[in-house]
Amino acid sequence: MIKIVGLMGLVLISTLTQAEDYQTGLEDYAYQAELSELEGSLLRVNLLAELLVVLARDDLGDVAVFDHRGERMPTWVQPRQHKNIRQSIPLTFYEFTSGRGGDREERVKLSRDSQGRVEGYNKLSGPQSVVEVVSHYVIELPQDDRSIRIDELRLDWTQQPEQRLLTVQLHASDDLNHWTLLSANISLTHLMKSTVQPDGRGIRVDTSKKYLRLSLNEPPDRFRIRSVVGYYKSAQPKDIRWIATGALVAEESDPGYFAFSVAPKVRPEGVRFTFSKPNQLVKGALYSLNQKRGERILRQRAVVQHNITGNSDVAANKSITLQGVRDSQWWFKPEQAMAESPVVEIAMPQYELLFLAGGEAPYRIVWGNRDAPRPTNKLKAVIDRDRRSTIDLPLVVMRATTPLGGEERVLQSKAESWLKWLLWASLMVVIVVAGRMAYQLYREMAGR
Image (cartoon, rainbow, N blue to C red):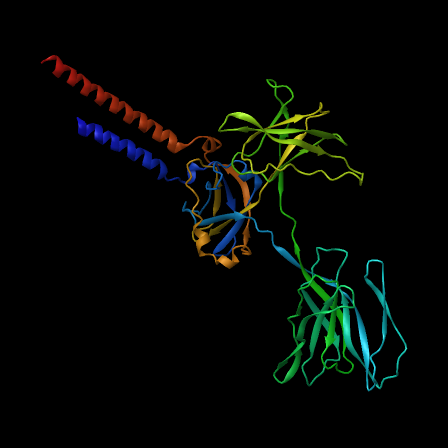
């Protein structure tokens, strides 16, 4: 009998272990969408915000890709990369000449505006030179937009010397009087098959100063720069998807509080209120329901939202940051009665899923599964560490969403349901066996 009880204990332990090893298949997910077909061994797909709001796991473990045969593909989910765009802008420059054969360099007077920017220059009278050549150029960097930081120059010129290499020095300055050397020997040309050719690599620049001075080493005759183009990196604005979750709902049991909810698994990057009537303003406190303590917690005391437009003196409306709080139930308590219940919009973070297209197309993406295991991100291990933040793979598109197991797969666990019945059955067997042991023991003691 003791062996039987021990065997039942092993059954219980095995049952609990199987809860972690429960294997999920295609039918265990809530929704699916077929992916567009594209050539490539590694592909990526942007995860829509509508997908993120119905996930069952906060680690995005219940998102997967299956091929046509139902084989699961290795994947890696990461925040969507916001890549910089390479842009260019023509730069204003001024040339300064000196007389070869004379004993003095040409004198120049610069005119500047109230901000110190060069508006132009005037040549002053000087000695007549035999040959006039350009000695250096002053290049004005963008000053109105501080977000533009030039990191490369590309030049176009005429009358390139045919028999020798062309090199320059580069200095930088804020006041046109004090110059800092950036580079003493930059090659504008190189030798190819005994012929001098322009160097297409451009001039690298690393300075925050306002002006550059390009000085020619051994200025050649009749050499002129026709244009200067500056290149810089322009960051793309962050891709945020706002989703309306409905209007604030007045709490009947607790007057003065208006409830709203956010996605319980993937934390939003922000919340904002939108109004149907113009020129609305609300101010109040923000609360959330702490699941562990089971009580309402004050999160922010002075939350302001408005839609006032057409007045430059009014600051733009800012979204509400949730400060890392993962609670799903929230309340807004206005200081005064509101003319209308504003609609709540949440800013969902943007993710992309990378997958190995090693199966049979077409592929489909599935999501929403309480029984899904923790994500392994197997694909991450084979992608070069230095390229992970800049990887640019072919982009496939999610087609129409169709249900698989439906919303109950997000709310209810198949494994938990099956294991629950097994545990109850095992427990009933243990009770019956223990009862029989107790009855036999009672009969033995009564017979003595």
